[in-house]
Image (tube, rainbow, N blue to C red; front, top):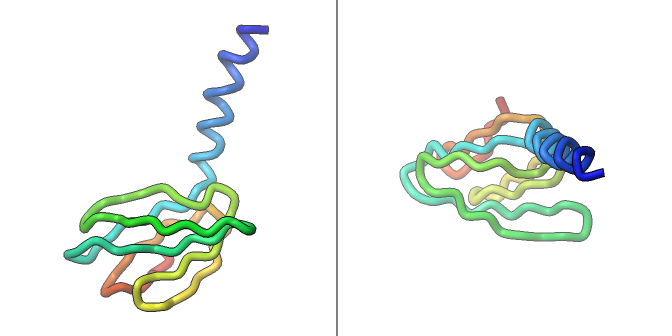
Length: 87
């Protein structure tokens, strides 16, 4: 049973990251995104030039510009001039 847990836990963690959205802040200052997943709402600050992984199961993201984008969880996005650009 321990062997099963040792194999499955890393696989589940990898699977969660593999299907998560990647956000890179291309602006010169930190950007705060509002992320809504189901009934959960959080604010995530992304430093200038930093990349974060968000939304493993899909979510709605509100950018500093007020843009609201629905994500499935497999996108690559950039913050440019406070707006979300989906790649």
